[in-house]
Image 1 (cartoon, rainbow, N blue to C red):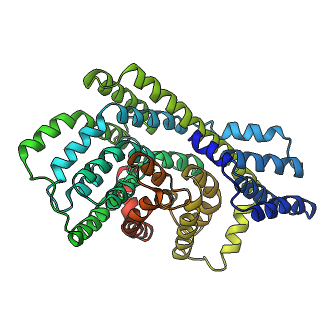
Image 2 (image 1 turned 45 degrees about the vertical axis):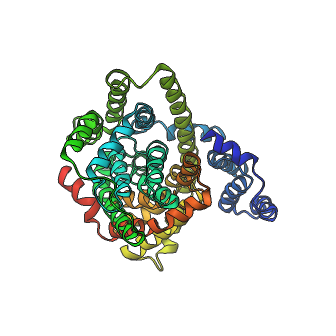
Image 3 (image 1 turned 60 degrees about the horizontal axis):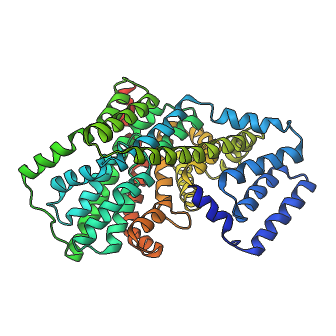
Amino acid sequence: MSRLSLMRWQRPLISPLLAALAILGCVILPLMGHDLAFLFFALFTLLVLGAPIAISLAGACLMFVLITGQVPNIVVAHRMINGIDSFPLLAIPFFIFAGSLMNNGGITERIFNFAKALMGWMRGGLGHVNVGASIVFSGMSGAAVADAGGLGMIEVKAMKDAGYDEEFAVGITAASSTIGPIIPPSLPMVIYGVMASASVGQLFAAGLIPGLLMGVMLMLMIFLISRRRGYQRDAVFSLRVLGHTFKRAFLSLMTPIIIVGGIITGAFTPTEAAVAAVFYALALGGIVYRTLTWKKLLKVSMETIETTAVILFIVSAASIFAWILTSNQVTQNVIALMGNFADSKLAVLMMANIVLIIVGCFMETIAAITILVPVLLPMAVAVGVDPVHFGVIMVLNLMIGLLTPPVGMVLYVLSRVSNVSFERCMRGTLPFLVPLVISLLLVTFVPAISMWLPSLIYR
């Protein structure tokens, strides 16, 4: 992620005129007394100049505090520290570490082979295998990029070798990776839970059925495309092969059961589940499979530290931004403004979906959640939307954003690991946006899809 930040600093301005207008606005607005408008212009200016999102957020907030003089400067640092002083956030480094250990410990390959034996007999078999493997792996990593980077290399190569179109292979791999943060565990839902003061356990439970729904919708699209293009079955169903691959993958398949089952039954909290996942992955890779060397462990540890630092920096910077919005009653003003044409649950949810889809195209998931929760959630709650239901809607929207330019992090990752151009990755993903959007609409307007399981477990 740090490389991405460096690239942002080095790339040319999106538009010199746009940057000039943004800077001019930052100079004029404080003189006219429009302090909040200056805050957004400052943020916009830093983003246009290529600054990473965390620096843009913190820098804009610091300039706002310096110009307005509402609070002492040190409050910025205090609020940033308080923003990450949360026990549930401890789950983030452990889930990241567990996912990386599984990617480097040979676990993903065993899962893929089992999924192939289980689902490869269907028309367009490896496409279905792709989705099935992502569903299983989603119960381990909680991050779409980890799914795309870990399983993606195996899945795309296998599909290309079997004669599938390259764009189709990359497209379904990208689309299926978005299931990762919906089915528990989920890093974005941990962030949302902290920002919205919602139960992370209930959020995890709420994501299970929507994640499975996404998988079913993607498999229906695979069937339709395979029938039109003449893709055949990739394996003959064999109980012997299924039993053999299941035996090899059994301990790996226990990982999501331990994590999700432990949380749902109350055996441990989401944070404790993350720690358990790390120890289990270490035991599998280092002792059972013996594929995890000290060199790999050091590499994984450094990647985890780097990724965690970036995520927590974004969360801390966004927390001061959210505090400024809240203390200046921006949320109440937005609700009052939108109340004229968004006075029903249906209208608010439609508007929230549109906003989230657009923002997801331009902003990273963690940053979007931390910025938009203080603005959109109170408006949704005001019309009777459950915060847990809204959390699933928000994360699902932003996952679709991972497949759309210009940010499209999953597309960039798959482009790198598959040696397919970004444009072709994007073209291959387009057909699979349809089942994902259908899933989003069903989850949005049929609350029982996401709320039935939490109401059953936490009643």
